[in-house]
Amino acid sequence: DALAVPVDVTDEASVRDAVAVGESWRGSIDIVVNAAGIYRVGPFAEITFASWDLVHDINLRGTFAVCQAVLPGMISRRRGSIVNLASISGRTKATLAAPSYVASKAGVIGLTMSLAMQTAPHGVRVNAVAPGPTETEMILGLAPEMVEALVRTIPIGRLATTDEVASAIVFLVSDRSGSTTGETLNINGGAFMI
Image (cartoon, rainbow, N blue to C red; front, top):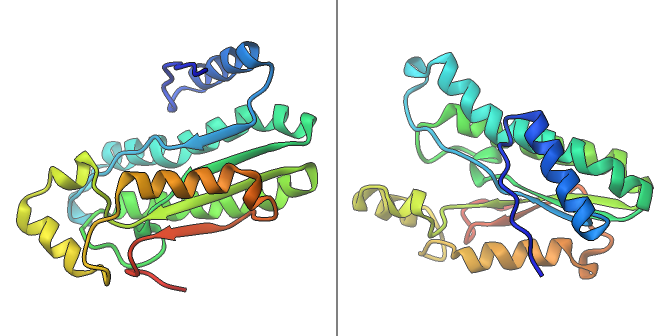
């Protein structure tokens, strides 16, 4: 069974209402994947405050809002798993000029670690995935020479697939990763290694 609930992650009431619908449908929300995100490319000097705020409102504040709405239920039930979508750009140099995106995704990684520390004693795990360039509309919509340039930065010589990213998320929400919390799993073909 699946339930689709439209939500505007920039609107606290919309997030709370969506969580309430989900909890009433199944009695609890045990898994959350925060995947809402946008990307804006442009030189730092040309970024407007409105553009900066929009990227952060969706990518970082939206993640915060969803976590804040679902965590009370997860903590009271002493179970739950949250996976936040970060990005390789939040961990290392950005391949495109996108300061607001980079900063927001670095914030998602920091939020993930902070929440993991606070929720682990209550049976709730919080992790992130940090995909590198992936076969998404956003990447495939770039000029072909830009895509080729991105691929050249990846040691395995190709973009990640959305199935590979999804498989990492499935692992992180599963019991197979029961002792994993506060981690950011890199899915980038070796473009960033720790």
